[in-house]
Image (cartoon, rainbow, N blue to C red; front, side):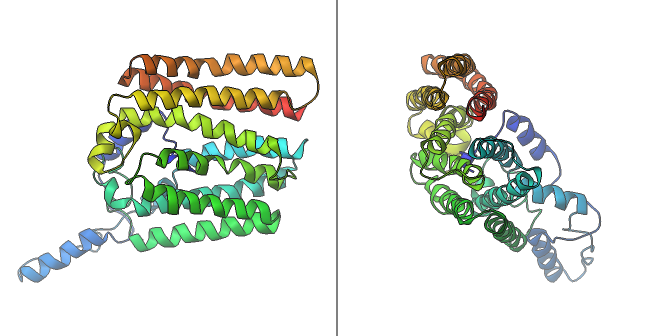
Length: 353
């Protein structure tokens, strides 16, 4: 779920950010949530000017469609989708066979709710910092479209319901892993972002541990090497993915007060080395998984497929290391979004059969 690390923003974040900053922060319509800032300003103006007109009942309110959209945006849906994709893969691997559809749906709902709760809690924590960044200023809280009380209540409900589903439908292990992931992402990774560049490492771990939710829910043991190699794939992947984002938005991160590798080392050398290490680490973990099942032919074919699929991101990392620049970082980001699902598919097919 770090991937804010696990934060993971997709390559469309630049367009989304521009759109968010260009659109009005509130819309007329039937009201559900009061904008505290606008509401307070209206009260103050009325108190200071006896001839002023009373504030319109519609002022400071948002429409139902906008509220629904904001609640969805608060969960960081792109990151949630990525986590759910990896959950499907690890569930199949943990089951060593076909997963019952109803069980898979319950697993996705529970995992998705916990991931969404973590994303929402992250935005609650960083609401003031988000106001300083163009990329995040259009989010519901910094834009003033949602009250803090509603955001906190929503965050708590998602987390409690998600954890309860995993515990009731599966077992203690996936529920505990989900809760531990939430705590690591929200209580450790999020505050570290303004204190040390090591936040990327903690965020990568927090973003990868959910791989074990699907694996343990479907019968895998938390002590299995297979499960931890799956975690290793996602931990390694987040370095090139996030370093590309951190480089492209390094000025905004610096101005907002975040401490990233790209703000500590503006030359880009540190970010480039971490990208290279992550690209290599992903391939190594995937290759190891290819050789766990017996059968030389299958292992050799799967290994060749992993090398072929992982090469584009490794090559982009090499290019970024050779010359850190926005175009190289953007290329690396795009390749990372293609490589992860390809490698997970290969590994899943190899372990599944």
